[in-house]
Image (tube, rainbow, N blue to C red):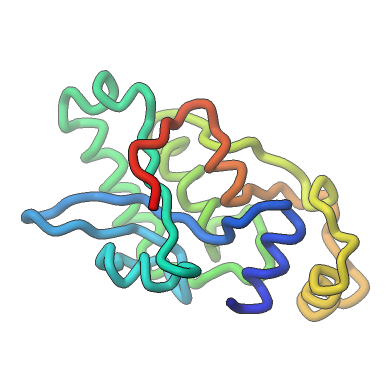
Length: 170
């Protein structure tokens, strides 16, 4: 586990530190994710990045209505490919579109395409920044200028969204 993953887990009191969006193409399962860059990853490679092969799949509760026609799916895909694909990963967790982190990608894709807010937006100061690994990571990234008012989203906020339901857990 990377020091960043550990810091995210400690700051958010969660076992989750990464997330993506699953989609199918030509019978193959992939994940849109923000890793080193925003990219498309085969599902098995995405799962291998996790701790002990653990993963959870969630789906929008309203997915049948939202995606009854392909138009909304197409809209999300167009935004992904035209606005976010190949953007660099945001180590600083800023809310701009210049660089993107995983839970920000999910939030922005659904919001930009369908005006759906998945996950509760918070400020960096809302997280638990008291543990030593978190303090070290903040110091490494920001020095003495920690942007406590920066808008952020986190994998646990995506996970806890009441707009989603769990369909598989391993």
